[in-house]
Image 1 (cartoon, helix red, strand yellow):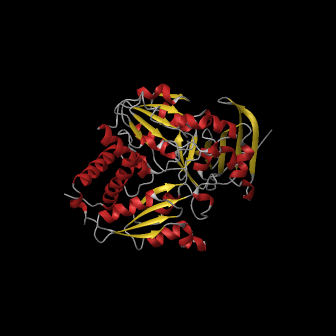
Image 2 (cartoon, rainbow over the protein chains, first blue to last red; image 1 turned 90 degrees about the vertical axis):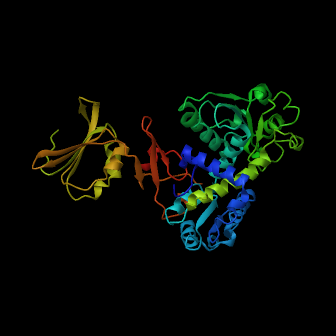
Image 3 (cartoon, rainbow over the protein chains, first blue to last red; image 1 turned 90 degrees about the horizontal axis):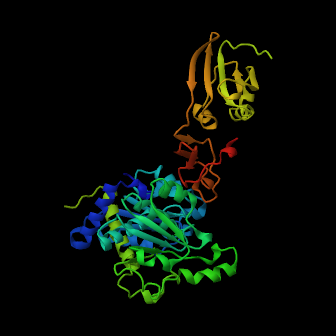
Length: 306
Length: 143
């Protein structure tokens, strides 16, 4: 694998390898502190991001490497009308590896055809965000000790939520996972996800509007935000918005080892009162994301640490 | 109706009835200087009705494009009045600059020099998706 554009670019054994490396980094950070000395990561963010860009930069710094780049298109030559592919080809002359976010879908793939430097898709519009999925996978693996035989609840905006589609896609490659898709009717999971992933792989799933009914059966609850602008009328939004806010009350019937996840940023869909619940994993996802990005940088640079 | 036999040329046979003019247009056959016959709605043992196009010259033809438009077409290459070669088409795995991606959020909508690449993702239902954004192709839009 030269670049990472989509979670499916990784084989299951490569995902296992990334998990093993990330866990090894967590266990012995010192061992990794200089392994990328002299290497440069360029973070090319054509649209703003807090978590992902800082996570990539922190990852490279913790590996002993350096960082360069820009955090918005206005501070790059894109503002002068340079094409994305030209910008990336130029940066490829300075950096050893590139993490790139762009509002247009497929921009990192187009750029990857013009440079020999490994490119990581750090989010391309609503299309794909594979390193978020890697963060989710490591979190599930660390919390559950497995990636198979789980009942996974996905809740909120299942229509536009790329992180949900990508997680379902990734976990569908492991045996015995089933899904409870909890959303308002306006935001159900798209047909192509049902047809191409769930039904094609004969995976059991239930679509429901009721979070509480299925709460006791869940091993994982992956929350996403229900956005006001997705509704056709305000009345529907007001009627439904509280149904998808997770509170301590709604968690009363949940399993003691439930893992509550969220790709962040959250607005109000998880009450801050849930943050102290030991089952809350969303800030662990942030930390794990950095370790998975460290493991990914090492894999793409072909650096093996004994 | 009598159409002269071809000595050296190409016959596109088993075109789905009604599709010949679209194929004529898509292959830019009106740019050719040789004779081209479009025969519509003739009897077919295989399909009931079919269209046929006869081209009185052996020209380069993008068979991937033709396979995408209608994989049931048979391409007969005629030399010295005889069928020298018979090609049965199939759906190509990949199409480059044949279909345009119409997703306004796709990188191809702003980068002029990026090839429009579509991949066959479901052979049974003939579904192609953009390699960049995975938008499903709209077959009607290429015509």
